[in-house]
Image (cartoon, rainbow, N blue to C red):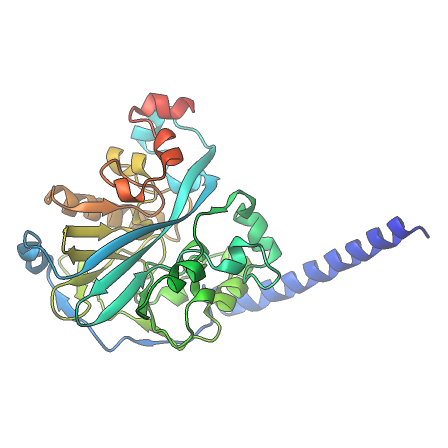
Length: 350
C-alpha cells in the first residue's frame, strides 16, 4: 500500500471514530437537555432590583464609570442569522442571505471604587494564532466560519498593557464569540451571567457545549444575576453595584439568560445590547435578529423593548452586538464603515 493510501486510510478511520464519538456525545446531551454548558452556576449574591422608571430618572446625569470599547476582530457570518430576513422591512429592502461583515467587541468598565470589569472577553491569543491549544473544536471552527476571523488585538496582549487587574467579567451571554477571550483571563476572576443562561437548550449545543466547557474550565461557578421577570412586562433591571452606575437588563430570547448592560459613564449613558441586536441596519430599521436565537418570539419582544427604551433617551449611546452605529466612531473600523450603506436598497445590492 502506498504512503498516500495509508494516510488516506488513517484519515478515514479517524473521521469514523470522530463521528462515532460525536454521535455518542449527542446522545448523552439529548438526555441532559442539550444545555449550553455543564459548568456549575451559583447566585451572584449582589445587586439591587430597580424599576425602569428608577433607572430613567437618573440617566441624564453623568455617572462615575470610565467606559472603553475595544474592537477585537473582524469576522463574517450569514446575514440570515443576524437579521430576520422575513420581516416586512427586510423584504421590502430586498435583503437576502449572504456573508455579512461583523466585528467582535469587548468593553472595559473602570469603576472608581469597585475595580475594573470586562463586558464580554474578546479573542484569546491562542485563537488569534490558531495554536494547538486554542479552546475551539474542529467542528465548531468550521461551523463558525473561523477562517474569516481577523484579530486586531488578542485579549492577552490587551491585558498586558494594563497596570490594574480585572475584578470580574460581565458576560452578555455564553455564545463562543463572546467568551473566546476567557483563556487569557486569570481563572480566579469571577464570571457573571444572566439567570439560567447555562441551561439554555438548543440543538446546536450538541456540537458547541464541549467547546463552551473548555473555555470555562478552571473558573469558579458562573455567578448568575438575580434579575427576575416583571409582572408588568417591563424590562427587568438589576443595579449591579447598588450605586446606580451599572445595570444588568434581562433580555431573553437570543439565549434564556441574555443580558444587556446600561452604563452611566463619565461621558454619558452607554447601552450595550449584546446580541439583543447584532446589526446597524437591524437597529436603524426596527428589524430583530434572525435565526441565531434560542427563542425568536422572545428575542423580538426583547428587541422591541430595548428600542423603545433607547427612543426615549436620545442621549443614549447604543453599542450593538456585532456592528457599530454611525455615532460610534471609537468602535468602528474603517473597512466596516465602508460596507454599511445607509440606504436599504444599496445595502441589499452588496
